[in-house]
Image: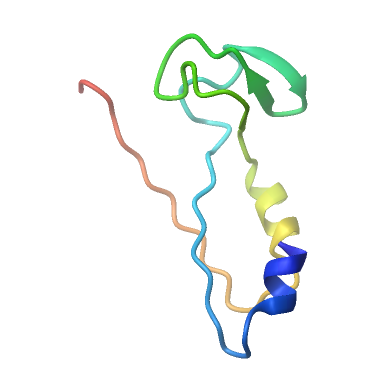
Length: 80
């Protein structure tokens, strides 16, 4: 995010999607470090490789140089 901040034009905007630690798959694989898993066997992240699940405070820290931060939470289901 530091590099994005550096190259972003004045009044520029970014859009990013980050996976919440409340998502299906969190804790179901081998944890490599806090909130980072591999070998997830169930859910939408099964067999997708390395997945990092973010906490809101972590996102805010990553974006601390930016202004006008808007965090939206989107919820979806799979097979109801």
